[in-house]
Length: 443
Image 1 (spheres, rainbow, N blue to C red):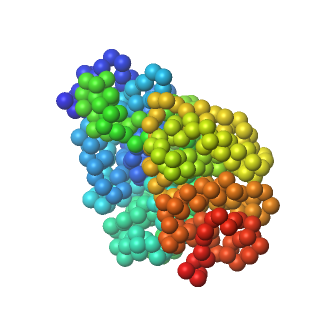
Image 2 (tube, rainbow, N blue to C red):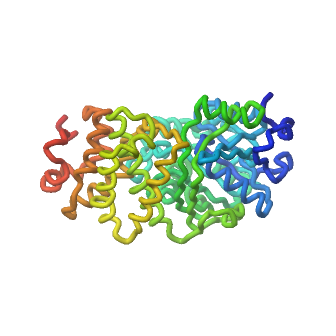
């Protein structure tokens, strides 16, 4: 028997149910990229906010490529279970996700959801590469963007879906809205706005001007370890529920969400349930990207070389742990002098050691060129210019290149852009003889 509205009362006694009636909840927001992270992070905050203060903040979730997740959620009336991995595992059913769509199959439905005057928010978790950026700017030659320029009413990318939906919103009623990136990008709000404006301007310069005036794009920082669901995790959930849940997710106990306080319209009572609103997200994001995320990448590439499968295994290896401690203390902390790197890293190590979490290193290792260009490259370059050490970070880069050979010039250039090759003195400091790289212009 499947988890759904009709079976919700049958779930086991150890599972927390929504404290509101999901069937009476109207939609107030759209989420692009309804994968495990969103379901384990933002939707939990939204459930808590509805329980704390009420409001119609149901979520229309959108799968960006494949219908698998959307289909599973539709079959369960949007309900799914979150398993919190701790010394004692905890379980709760989340009720704020009310509809699920798939962009390639239902583009009109996605655009209508963004245009709906009752929807005040769009949030996104589409991974770094989903923004189709070349540096800070939209890559107009990206295949998805070229497809969106050719057929704007059947968008392929998240940027295209936003522009098409906002065009429909402007044409229907012109209500303001807030669009929130929840991905690990520096200046994610500003960069998302820039990408949307670039594509909108190609479609209609007046649309771009309206978006810039009426749609807010606050910066954010999100943090929660959400390992991929496994047959074992799904079996645990089903056993506790006494029902089948094809959309369950697992996560760690810790969760953080920091949002720039710059909305253009209403929002859920997130401030009452642990979300931090601030005028400056930069410090929190730098700690997340350059400490936690950088450490994750280091453990992934170096740990995979040693045959480990999970973060907790790599973090427990004495040699890897010593090297990671040194990288943070000697190379990353000096580049972030105004931040409490040591305290943050101490909490991060505790999270990595959680014995209940099987966070796969190969999952973290995916899209390495994009991730390292955000997590390590800015610190590597800053240290090289200041004469500070870079060797341990470069060892991570070399471990990445072992999995992605230097012949992959796109990956190489994402890590070491043209400015590096143009400065021989900087290049000689940054790239020791042990790291065999080739100038892409001479490859």
